Length: 109
Image 1 (cartoon, rainbow, N blue to C red):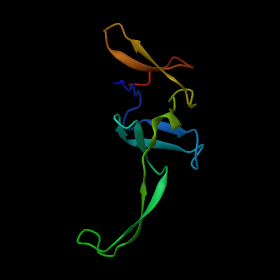
Image 2: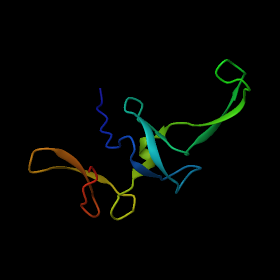
Image 3: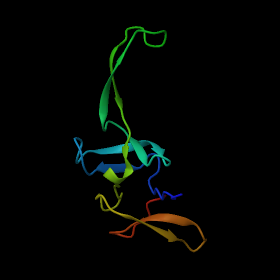
Image 4: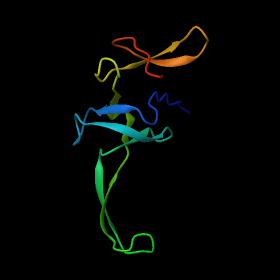
């Protein structure tokens, strides 16, 4: 059994590294740690055909986001405004925080 260390969290700003949305920046809406996938706002949009129902009166074609692999996105640093790797660092009070590997700025506020 493998342990997946996913350092990405909900509401993080990420940049897409590969695929049809390469270079786009979006906010993480959901993280699925078991499947190693993240749902990013306005990234990897798919079209679903739906029939009219009680919740959706008209039906038709609905555009929604689909999850992508977490290895295809990289966290954006708030200070240096570049996609960067993440390091874990323990503070003086014993708490673990995420730190930008480039500028050593604490990501978690």
